[in-house]
Structure formats: structure tokens, C-alpha cells
Image (cartoon, rainbow, N blue to C red):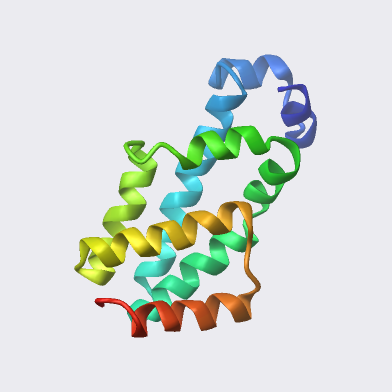
Amino acid sequence: MIDISSASEVARATLYNHFRDKHSVVEALLTSEVARIIEESKRAGTPADALESLSISISSDGALAGLREHDPVLIAQLLIHSEHPLYLELARAIYALTQSQSATGLAMRWLLGQAVQPLTPEQSREQAALLVENTLF
């Protein structure tokens, strides 16, 4: 929490008034980021464009980069909770693109893997196109 308050230039007391611990800060940040990337993907044209947009957003997200570097255990814990509301919200958005449970599951695993091993924009584009072409979309 000390690092977060320093980086955000907010007093620790103020930070604790809004969040009880570091996990709560990360949860709020992820909630905001998931909502943002879902809205971004809705503006994409095709399912491949939407998956590419999601992939690039996840792979280039600064908050996830910070978690990978400073708290990989926390990011691992967040990725395994398939009943978590954020996971389910992202899955619903992908299902809206795919209209297939199996394609949604495959796309979710592909995207979540990028939280720990990001792709380049070129890889995102190529893999999103392959995913759409070679699955049940």
C-alpha cells in the first residue's frame, strides 16, 4: 500500500479510506480495466477484430505489467477464479462474439494466458485471425 500511495501521490490514509488492502486496490483497477476493454472490443468490426483488440489491451496493460513484475502470485490467484464476476463478465462479452461455449472457453484461455505472457500487436492480430478461422465461430 505504501508503494501504491507513493506512485499515485495519494496519502496512505486517503488510500485506506477507499480500499482496505492491496487486493481491494487491484480489484478496483481490474474492474475498471475489464469494463474498458470490453467496451473497446464492442466497437471492433468482426470477431477477429474484437479478439485482437482484447489481446492488445491485455498484453499492453500497464497495471498487468506491474503485477507481473511485482506481484505474480496475486495475478495467478486472480486468473484461476473462473467464478469471479470479472471473469464471468469477460466470458459473457466473448460469448456475445462467438455464440459458442467451446469457442468462448478457448478464447478466454488464450486471453488470460496473455496476462502472464503478453503478445506483440502482430502476434495478437495473427493469433486472433487463426482463432476465428479455426474454431466454431
